Figure 1 (cartoon, one colour):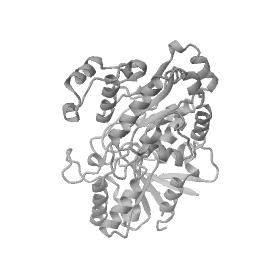
Figure 2: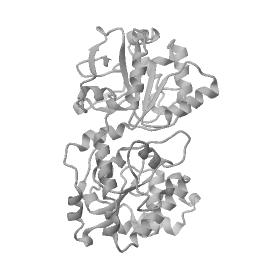
Figure 3: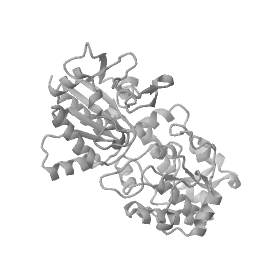
Figure 4: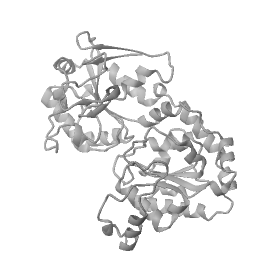
Length: 419
């Protein structure tokens, strides 16, 4: 099956070039502006999975075919890139920067406008309302809009919103783990750790820490976890990174003043890089995983929200590195992993946290860390995870976008265009 992509600038593979306030850096990476180069096109362009049963073409606007896809790359949440009324930046509607020829084709149902928010995972009901308003304002059939996002539950949220509002003509909403595929490509560049590597690294147990918990971008829930780790003195047992406290109002969360001062005196905690502005999303230090028994993932989102479940790049690193993990993320993250074919670690600790409310989920994770800390037989206990870790690493490496339900949904949207 073939997809034809159209660009304003087919040499630089850029779209939305009419947008002002755009500054490009080295390699055409967006430094400032609303519309970065979109992610999804690169699945075809780079042929990461070496598949032969699909093809793609691309062209400029002047020689566009009757049916094609046009990428609209976005970042941050919808309040930033949409241009909906009252936005803080006073941006105009994002569709104002789609070339007029493409908009004309969209009105005829010939182009799939792919709104690419794959690096993010927000649930924004206001976005559905705004996009439908845009369809009415610009005369677009909703089926020419395809919103792709890292929020796995966004399609369910949109369907519920449409049912509540009596919407029959609908957009395409596809939520999938883009950062799984990105990390898969990224981590393949280096040899993956083996179980023998772990055994050798853990032979001298005095050099092994209990766990790793790596936090570069400050988020409220991440700060709360680190405060609780410091309260229990568990930060001294692990490789924990976190900058100084950024958020305020912790007294309203029941954090005693004495504990808050202890946290301020303790932070920052540094593992391998004191520059917390250095984005290491696509970087891995395998030594951190070899020198610890398990990982504690402090995800991008952790508070309970309706129709929101986002798995970031952080989780795939311990899976690649053959390490057990717990996740302080959104409810049912573990259940979603199992649906994707991975196995989790209910045999090592209490994994009922996956079904609990957000704060209870965090408390159970802290209890789990404490319980492992007091185990004397950590080597034997950890050895039980080998089969699961090796299965997960293999499962991770074999995931193929072009053999996924998400690809089939995208192709159904594309092939459903008028031609």
